[in-house]
Length: 334
Image (cartoon, rainbow, N blue to C red; front, side, top):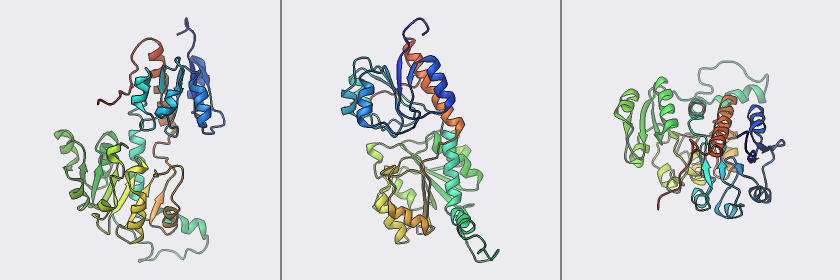
């Protein structure tokens, strides 16, 4: 690359300093030092001149935006695992390659999922708030105060047994949970044996039998509102729902109604249907101790973000060295 013009790279958000420094060393990179989300107009202006766009999950790279791209835009190197924010087909039709950063956030997201699985039934946030919001009012230990529910010996139903779902299952098994899962296809017999996992081809049947539901599937048209009002009604009143995948997989209004009516015991959410907006009804339920809400921090570790940046850099360098990027995302087949 030193003998050629350095590609012009437009980065939509603030990335870790180590990543940005390397970007500037290798490319003609325009950074977003203030980390203010780029406007639609700014994105359009960028793709008319840049060779590479580096968006994140908060940027909507739809067909209309891609249509505005200049002929020099050859690569959309997304700083993300998921690519539901990018119209892959529209990019392919315009001759633009799309890449992502897979397999670096698995353990971090699984850790956060397990944290929510513990936090909701054991009322961890409620307990912490007693000490923080009303210092000095705690009267000490009591045998019947702040009782939660044990997770050891319970059944967890994992929706989406990919890398993250499998990592969640390994953690859950270590905490004494019985593993159940629903997936498009069964995992390998070796993985099933390792996890002592029960496969359900019917999501409805699994939901009716588990104590904790963990949502770990990707956001696709097929998974939109996968946990609908009808499916939430299948859950037991003592069950909990945890979502660290994508907000639109759960019908949020239906979830609020189920929680309010006591149809389910609680929920832990790291993602939201209309992110960054959070349903005020969910906030109210959180204040009442029925929900734990986190601001999409499932993958927020320093190590994970740097690993993501390294993959973006590798994808860009590989492409402009004339090779196929290792993390190319292929368009759908009609």
